Length: 240
Image (cartoon, rainbow, N blue to C red; front, side, top):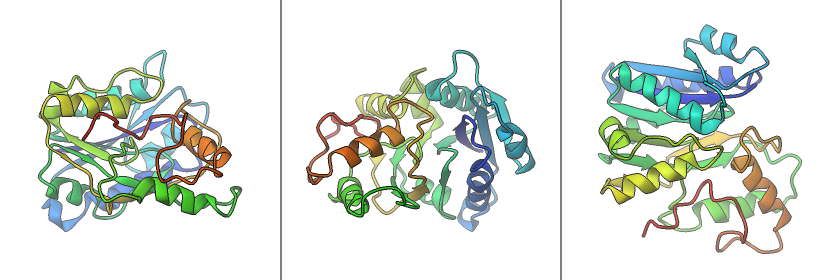
């Protein structure tokens, strides 16, 4: 069984599209009919996120206090492991995954898979923003970025690595760094891409929205190298 974990805080506007894209990926022929369980972890939502996710076919859990993205991902992962998942995939509630997302993660043969992201709509940002982001995200052949919106890990390696930490942000980076230290085989496919929003209203302080804001404010420094002072949510500096 494959468990897909989606932390969500007040995502009523986007959760249906997210879950629908995962359901499509779950039906890919290369999965040979393996069961895929979509677990949306509602993180103290004040809107209809949970109800919408259930109607779309997801299991819904409530994140325990104090909440936060690390707590939400850890809660979903633990539930999936108890249900017998052999592989854990994670994405974000404002993200859509491609139809072959899960099949391609498994096809790498790796224990950890870290893909890339693209932004759906750059409205509200300077014209140079899209190019600066692409240069940062895919400017080198081995990207070495970590996005909770696009990663997967086998159950055994997840447990050996200590699982997601209950962090306000950076729980994805911390997990991959721990997996690398424990000897995991990591795949970094540049062309395994999910599509996410460009919103500036961050659900997780220090997360992807914060990175976009930092990038926008530093466009004078064209991103050949990472931006000085940027949040480290999508980088694993210790990985060679």
